[in-house]
Image (cartoon, rainbow, N blue to C red; front, side, top):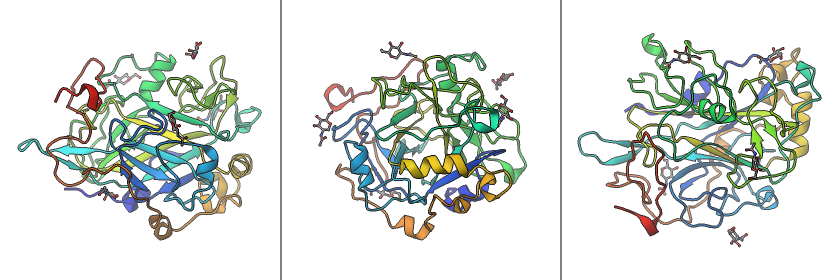
Length: 361
Ligand SMILES: *[C@@H]1O[C@H](CO)[C@@H](O)[C@H](O)[C@H]1NC(C)=O
Ligand SMILES: *[C@@H]1O[C@H](CO)[C@@H](O)[C@H](O)[C@H]1NC(C)=O
Ligand SMILES: *[C@@H]1O[C@H](CO)[C@@H](O)[C@H](O)[C@H]1NC(C)=O
Ligand SMILES: *[C@@H]1O[C@H](CO)[C@@H](O)[C@H](O)[C@H]1NC(C)=O
Ligand SMILES: *[C@@H]1O[C@H](CO)[C@@H](O)[C@H](O)[C@H]1NC(C)=O
């Protein structure tokens, strides 16, 4: 089995970066367990297993102050005490039907100056995430593509923002291109690169993005999405009406292995999602946004350690930051069923997110 590694992730990179950016690299996960303080605050356990990165005070509930009081983070930028999480991936053996976890190769979060709001595009400048801000991208119930590429509605942009790439560079093969959203169906000789918000495929150029527009008022919303919106070009362009605050654009990328990787209950890959709760030192983040974007020095080309407002920790140090899971269940090793109630659902209609109370298996 291809074993993904953090070194491979960093070496391959994830984005074709052309202008100002810096990067938060997260190594071994902080913890993996069934918790989700955004979708299911206070609920132990939540619906499916997540791989969680970031600050050590992660738990079933989020407050900005509790996160800021964390003693460490497994991500390398010390001023960032945020949490980032996404589903833990499992491989289903086609013969035995048993599940085994897929290695986690780490997470890279790129912060980019993008969109009409950026000073480089004549805008007023981008804003740091406010204290208490949280957001999600993607939809855990999704099992198929719903909108034609390029439609440009927020729903379509949200769908296009979830991308999977098949890294085939070593074999000199073209990458995988299904305009993004489902799992690759071919072998991925060089690993399996989930590119949440961008594409690095040689054959692709459509830029993609996380929401970089904010309504300026709400730190969260009932669906955890509606207080944010995507730039009109995902990677560039303008914010829609009602979302006047232009944020620094974040994009996540993680590396994983092999093909046939069902997400919890999802063999298709369309349900991929990512969650963010802000624990940044917002002053440092704002200073980095404003000043670490100089095209004439190393900050303009992603050398995060050249940004005087950010302290880059070593991988070894970051790897020491771990917390014990509070949900006591087997999530590793060979499993007959995915943790929680997650029967495989192939779509194309939206899946049911079962709980213990309505579990059909
Ligand atoms: C956590 O969130 C739940 C649900 O919103 C709430 O009932 C509970 O009081 C919260 N607990 C803490 C410690 O904030
Ligand atoms: C991807 O989208 C483009 C339009 O942006 C289209 O021309 C192309 O055929 C699509 N590719 C696939 C594999 O659907
Ligand atoms: C966000 O939700 C509010 C309240 O449900 C609704 O009034 C508003 O139209 C929604 N905005 C968008 C852009 O969907
Ligand atoms: C974004 O669009 C502006 C024009 O609106 C352009 O000047 C700039 O180069 C674009 N940036 C990227 C990264 O494509
Ligand atoms: C499961 O494996 C992952 C990856 O090796 C590790 O980070 C995590 O601590 C393990 N969790 C449990 C509960 O054994």
